[in-house]
Length: 417
Ligand code: PMP
Image 1 (cartoon, rainbow, N blue to C red):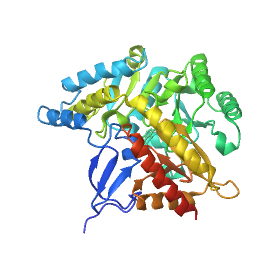
Image 2 (tube, protein in one colour):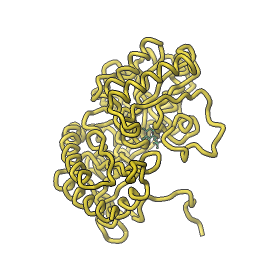
Image 3 (cartoon, protein in one colour):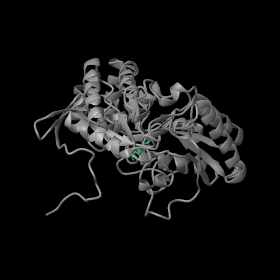
């Protein structure tokens, strides 16, 4: 009998038959509160009526326009709509299908534009699973092991992960920037460095926000040494953190911005944005693809951006994120096994630790399983899978937040008993 490959391990035993807003309905007849949102993808909730309508209409009009053959209207509309939300200056777009593909586009652009071979990445970062993106991923050996040799030219430098070092943010930031300077002096000279690629909030690496001083320090070094600052906003973009882009928290603008996930509410779509002058340096014909900027995905993305604007979802992520955070902090305060609660907006993680403060993936896994029994779907992250993360759709309301928190409190009690 044919079956899915055994290496695919699903985080929950649920078979979903339908999704609506922040809920998934299982084949088992149960309704689940979905705090995973397809790994931060269904930004407008499952099957938002306006996204459904836009996609349905596009399916009956033109499914596949093939953007290296013809221009199509949903793509033209999307370029205009993205122009309204992108930082000033990032006025040129290249669209692809997945986060990994977009990260690789940014890498190719950086190398062709600078003529330099190396890319700096931050320790704990996740940038995807294709081989170059996996080479840039250091959030867990499980994403790299056994694939060697990976792409060369990747140099790893610290992220200000204060909790792991047991430091405050200021000390962690100072350390990370000092190490970066040392790396530029000892491992990858500025003349060999095309770019530094970083997430505004480490995602798969454990939901750790960067600090303003750190990202500003990267910006300053990129300018000084002539390499590019690439922000991977695949998970942090489109309102997730309570600002439209994650970097809006930190007063820093990238040279290349990478987006995917929440952009099209579940249709595969990703892309990079950069100043046109920089994008001109991509050698003609060297980047493209069969499915990039699929017409249905572009129509869904336009509808997504409209919903985000009209329903004020960025503001909602901020308000609901604060409410969720308050509840998570309250549970953490009375639970010895919780070491840290952190994140921005509706991108929040709770880290489980043993009595000696070591990462505690066993408890995190027990709590995650207990939550499923309570009807709450959650995912893990962090190098040890010791962090339980919450990334509900941006349309979540106060009632659903409170329901989620009540289920969370019970799951933590069961999982830590
Ligand atoms: N970058 C970041 C920050 C991500 O979170 C992810 C996916 N978790 C990726 C890149 C890769 O995206 P995809 O799975 O669509 O290739």
